[in-house]
Image (cartoon, rainbow, N blue to C red; front, side, top):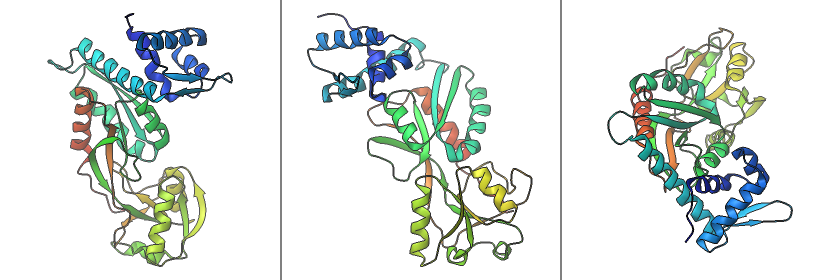
Length: 304
């Protein structure tokens, strides 16, 4: 039987993340013909068709190819650990973390500042993106672990809880409801909402209002949390955002914001670290999760 090189495994392990061979070749910095030859060589070695390459250059992995790619990722991960000797003594090598965009500014600085101090031999690489981007990168083996909400997660992932979170009302300090310690969602019926338009938050908020028999009035839809807070700080409307650590009740313009928990609580969830269930966390990734739980697990929201 012909030998299979680690380079062949590395190339094939990346294929599930691409729909064309040309796109995969460009990402892998290899010619399309060389990548095609590598795949053909693997297929001859294993004696099975691993992918379907159409005339229009579309690329689809067969079931055997999907399983081969998953096993290739495991072999590559184990090889990296063997080379780095991470299971003995000081942790060394990379950790590739993905973080959901909406809370990245609240957790990434804490990790990038503190984790390398505790483990100077570990290099932390961070990718910020949507759930779809993070899931795709995890499955392709580009990430060790991703931080996201435990809401509408697909099957096939292991998880570890990092911190609890719930929907909060962001109000201008002069808003009548800011005088109380909590806010009832029903009391916001008809008020102008500056809506943070991101999945799955839109569906959650709509369902929360419907459950309280309240009317949701969206005044503006924006895709940045800092813009929600800036508009709230100017009194344009109110915001509904998930609670986050390492944030202050003030807009980017320095205007105060009153942040109040909802009573009864709405959209209780957790930020979790997830990774494919067929993959084993490296000691470095496990140490990062430990650090995240230690530093972020017990935050308390300041009242503005």
